[in-house]
Image (tube, rainbow, N blue to C red; front, side, top):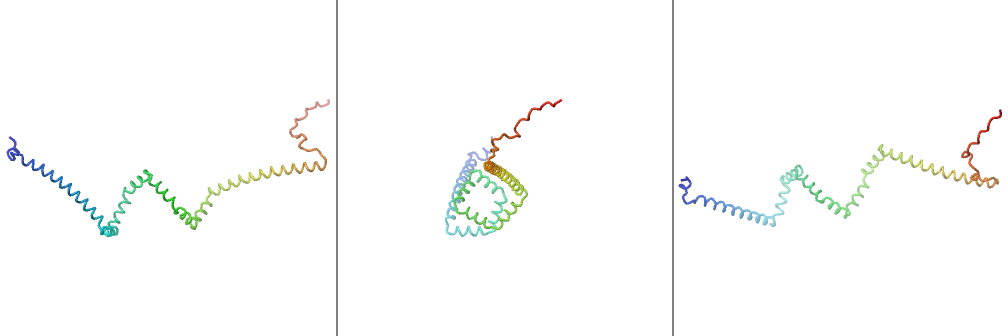
Length: 188
């Protein structure tokens, strides 16, 4: 015979414990529902806004913000926002407003921007690129001037030859392109 049979021959303790557990679970469910209802009524209250202002002006709000910014929550929120396309949607929304034009106007009116532009323009990389570009442009101009001056020279030469009744040089063979005359044997 077991000790539990002697102490509780009808199993009242086991049934009572089960009923207590079931009752506690039901009471817990009822208390959770009551807490949610209480919270709903508190938020809907006319005093809720005043209570929120008091909380937000308190050191508690400052600690909460610092905790969020210093902790991993902000990193997770930003990463999730980027992964889910929230950043792109925000940018699209902003681009549809006058804000970008306003920011651009303010930027162009600022002395700081022109200071940055001056610094960039004086940088060795930019001056080297401008020098290289200028040299290439100068070569192009010189080549074009050379071609035009040769054409002008040819026109003047033809006009002078016509005026002097001399044959056109372009019809005469270029001596530099003629083959060398054959060598004659030396008289002995």
